[in-house]
Length: 206
Image 1 (cartoon, rainbow, N blue to C red):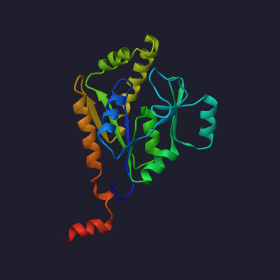
Image 2 (tube, one colour):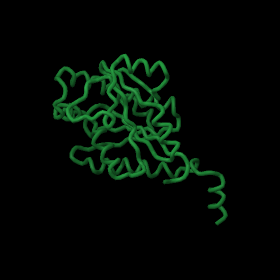
Image 3 (tube, helix red, strand yellow):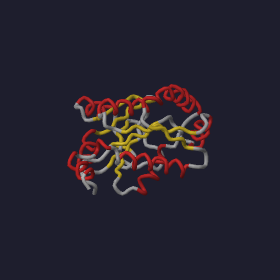
Image 4 (cartoon, rainbow, N blue to C red):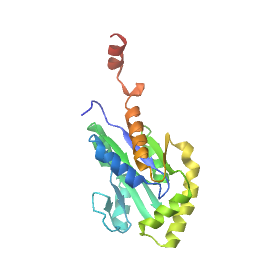
């Protein structure tokens, strides 16, 4: 395990940009990276596992935890509540592991306000039209729900400049986008301000 606290990486972007696929691939190749599981009040999709993909809560339980300050961020998205459990993130980072999460854009900006050291990465497809194609391919939502998600996506694109990095997930070239994400994580560990004064002095006088 590397010395010192870990880093918090926030991968966000519009629905259909490929967050799930890319983050899963990155986790598979990065043993020092931990995924921050979000809580939600929406119904599980086919194949989703409690505690692995989400913590599925009733609206009443979610609101109780929210009032208790148990979420690093929370948001109402498309009629459902989503939140990032604060205790998991803080404990895992303190143990020296890097943490990655993939909230919606408003959630990512809320994390940035609550945790200024977070590194924000905006994920987009190379063409906006691909968002609709990917959402249709999921076969998990009605046409009306997809249209609403695309409307939200247009609004989310306006916040790109609030992020630290942008990664373009080109159609049929997701492996390259994973490499780009890995490069961001790797480079962030070598920022000067992440080194102690003692470590920098030892380098200066070698």
